[in-house]
Length: 183
Image (cartoon, rainbow, N blue to C red):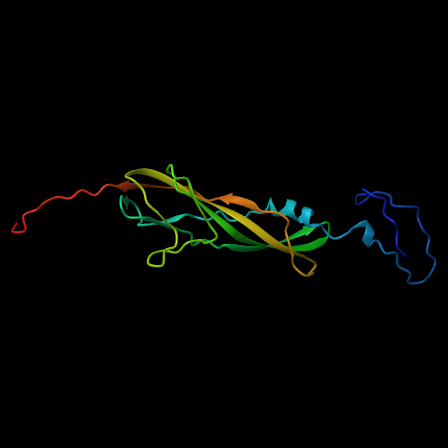
């Protein structure tokens, strides 16, 4: 026995008159009164999840050298699974890093990639600096899929971002110095 739910009704709103059922074992289907969470509802939970802030790693460690690129990467996890309860439904959200924005700390701006980078010798993210002091950090754009009570996965409609902790380093200018080879 279905119940027509008025347009705009929320859980707990009266949806009709009380119905008396005098049949043994009879059930009333209340699914329409508490539908599974929508993608928009899951997105509002996704935005509030404690997503990880990915740490910026750079090479060489410590100070860089003008004329040699600084290598950036993150070795932090780029995926995380959360299970939340939304109105009695078990919702599993699988968050994945989709985009990495490397804020270089200089006037050239940002490097935007879909790659978390790699350390030397397999580096994929590099940036050249002039001598000076710089503060860099990483902004990660997260996307996700979700399931409701074990359903087929669906995309969460939207993304959210996290900013990692900043890392400050100096880039030094190397100077040549003549020496006597016989000393």
